[in-house]
Length: 221
Ligand code: DX5
Ligand code: ZN
Image (cartoon, rainbow, N blue to C red; front, side, top):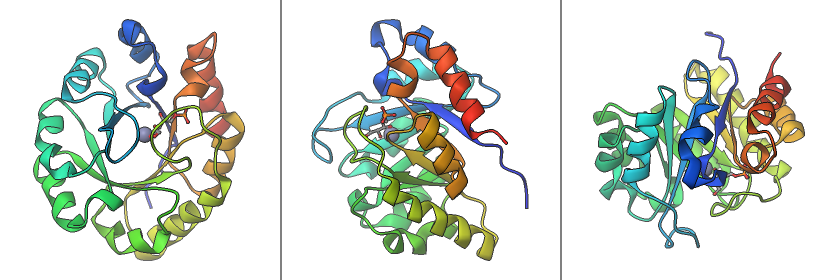
């Protein structure tokens, strides 16, 4: 099986948008992803941004642009986010009853297809779709806001997905999103995660560059 080096995905949700260029510049395009949280005030009780900011992000980095759609009816927006430059587009299982169809739609645009689950959604609900995924995104907080406490109980989903990937020789990456800091990144890596989204732990610090380096070190080895 191909080795998968762990990846940190700085989440711009926690960045200062008046200095977005500086915030994104800390990501090393060779190894990091830039995570963009799209919220519609319907699927989650918060409202963030749309394709315009994703297009700006695309211009600011060569890194993989990872778009996490926390929206109702995501299929209506997939094409616009791909046109804006998204490399990975993840939709929520809870918002996409025609799951396979939306995943196919994402791949048809040329983007990688991701499926995200909220803390209340069991692993078993997502398991049938794992063979159709490039990314399985396990939420370790309730989606909607940065800066919440990590829910370690969710790591059972990561472990289960990892085991299924080995068993069926699948290729998807496991992304862990919410409450990631050095210690939680370490446990999430040990549970089998590949991609670690971090907002506050990077951007709500006095030295985001050093905070990112500390996260890289926490998941290395
Ligand atoms: C929450 C978002 C996360 C958020 C994580 O709904 O999906 O990506 O940015 O922020 P932290 O790392 O602060 O928990
Ligand atoms: Zn996210």
